[in-house]
Image (cartoon, rainbow, N blue to C red; front, side, top):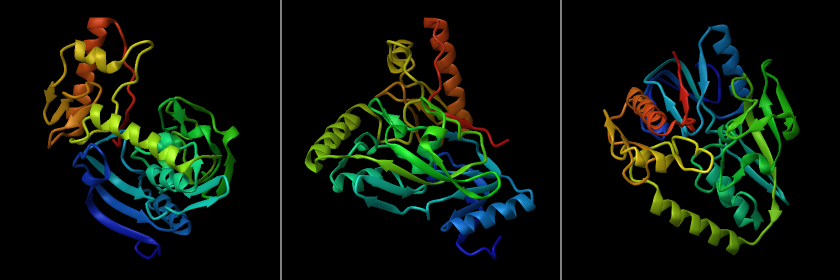
Length: 292
């Protein structure tokens, strides 16, 4: 593995700064990949040596376990973004906010909703990220992946089944390498004004001063998960280092030393309380990553 060019490898590495909950998880190997060829060679090696692996994007919207006895792969070296007319093509390690900024600077509109999404392109496509009644598949044209046979293939958007925060890419061995979007001609100043308004609203309503992974639950039909949680008297409820935010009840925040179990146990408590008081089964918006 150390002989493969285009990799940076760390052993017994901390993942604390690689997930937005700041869970102090550890991995046997942490591998940063800089080229597609390096990724293919790495995957061949891991398969040969029977070493399990996990592709980690920006670590947002997920709850990771405390230890992974395998290789965590980061594609942050694959981060190029290219604008050609109305088309924006970006590698999977590019951040959603960076893609939005570049498109706005080219007077393109359609991705303003994504300015505050703390995720990579690859992770956002697999999870069909969205906000403000928009989602990443609205403007997606096609993607490139490494498939199960370690071959690079192009897949049109039409061949990817997708629903709210889910796609048919989840649970497969396909790894997103690149995505192409088709946007519309816009006005930079109008886009910047929209972005500014949304950022101000976000700062006013969300607990941005403590680590979290965004909204914990989906909003039930004709209601809001935050309202239900607050009405249950759970605002400020703590288990270990995890706490229901006092600013927005549909956020769980890390007060300093939260473990994955602290967060998962708090989620279970919220679910049981809402079921008991309102007869509603809340649907988890975040994804629990069970490496065991």
